[in-house]
Amino acid sequence: MATVHSSVQQTIDLFDRYVIANYKRFPVCLVRGSGSRVWDSEGTRYLDLFPGWGCNLLGHCPEPVVRAVQEQVATLIHVPNTWYTEPQGLWAEALSKISFGGQAFFCNSGTEANEAAIKLVRLRTNGVRYKIVTFRGGFHGRTLGSVSATAQPKYHEGLGPIVAGFQYAPHGDLEAVEQLIDEHTGGILVEPILGEGGIVPAPPGFLEGLRRIANERDLLLVFDEVQSGCGRTGKWFGYQHFGVVPDVITLAKSLCAGVAGGAMLTTVELARHLRPGMHAATFGGNPLAARAGLAAIEMIQREGLLANVSVMAAIFKSRLDELATRCPMVRDVRVIGMMIGIELAVDGAPVVQACLDKGVLVNCTQQNTIRLLPAMNISADEAHEGCDILSEAIMEVASSVS
Image (cartoon, rainbow, N blue to C red; front, side):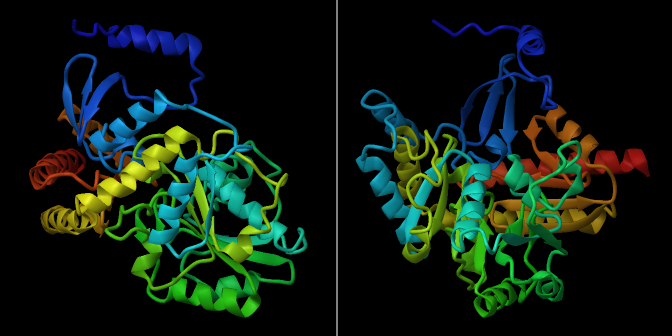
């Protein structure tokens, strides 16, 4: 028997009464997804170029992940980290092998992974070197520590005083970094590719310079790869594009292909500072997340999806560059694997709405940058379809404001 869904308005009314309104939501109720397609309760089908806010890197309901979770949920859903489970150990091993080696701390989200990294920086010197340099335009999460690390004042409104110890430098400015460092500085936290900041890669030589500074001043270099990690850029991790190895990386979003999961990876030498009793995450590394994370890595390897990212990225780059040549409203196109930013000369919200009306889901960040985080297994036909509709939406908005 077919599933009967409530009307959209009934669901909205339910939310209005019982769910805190801390999100701006579109009046659409999504009920099913498969690959890069998703359906709402009215039966309308959408092409999702921003699946799961970047969490669904393998699209909606990837079969190997679904099978792994279904099997695990019938066997063991959750046990605390006072016990051993094989899936968590195997997951940590897999992440170690595709990164720089070392060990993993598991949590549930990117903000939690960054909180763990912040604690690790402080614990390394017992809190003596507590300051961390971060960068304007970066984004590190919503909990009080990670939002304090986020050098965007709009996220601090009404929260003061924020956590002490974070010092903000302009993105790409090595000289400013050096001027901020003093005897109490313990680390540098940076996204190799700004995500919420508009899909902005590190300028040439910037990450190399940070590595040099960290080595010279005995600082921990932490890369926030919550958005750029796990294969999204065509390599397992964003740092691998730059030839710079960090001391710590933080992961979440696509780590478990849509299941909640986060991780902090660091070296064996540094990991010892996160000693028992100093940090924890009740659900971190739970059997469901671990099986999903393992299945995601195996699917990417088995289906050659890192290579597919490069092929699909070339399609998006070619199509969007062509759009920019005929639409002055498009200021810049930035494509790093399946991280895509289209910077506009106007507010991007009307473009998002126009795309929704035409059956394509996209995002706008920094007010004027259309952000796409497509699934890494998107097809060429879907990429072209998305570019067709996005181009049409942008041209319509451009004509309306000219």
